[in-house]
Length: 229
Ligand SMILES: *Cc1c(COP(=O)(O)O)cnc(C)c1O
Image (cartoon, rainbow, N blue to C red; front, top):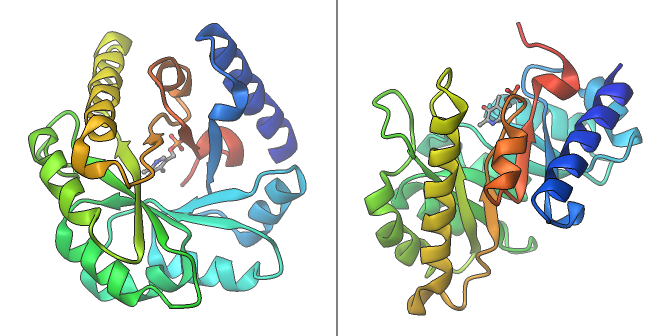
């Protein structure tokens, strides 16, 4: 089942890449395994997936320990509180959900010395929703400039979650604004030493639209592992 789902998601990514004249290797499939057991991750790993995303620190801790013999790249994509930054800094390779300087500072300070710098995306509240986390679009550059100075962090780009249940045209416009914002960061003179190359956007229902708009990481949960309870 998971094997078939992976084949189907790979096919969708392939098609969307081709349709937008992009190389399929420019889009990473991040398998979002929140609420799913470690066995499901092991199954997906057997089919060749290497990048897994978790939203809850406790789950990241438990599953990374259970699967420590696999060569998994762990991405933390959920809301992150100060008291959990040390755990995430010691396990994750990527954090997609940084939306304030305090959290970025702690991640940098707490990153163990023997590990590579932590890859970080700034989460942007692209549709300015009261209920969503993320920095406001107009405050993104200032935050990026601060984060770029932190020693144990690599600023890689932006992550967005557009409004749910809106017409595709609306979602597409949100993705386009995110892509424009990323280009502004890439072009900024003070960010030239940051390896900014990542647009984390698109989930099960809208990964094609995201790839058309320049996404480099699609975060896919339910279409790989089945619906969550
Ligand atoms: C759960 C989640 C996903 C995956 O969503 P699906 O619709 O199940 O593909 C992607 N990104 C984030 C931040 C999530 O919390």
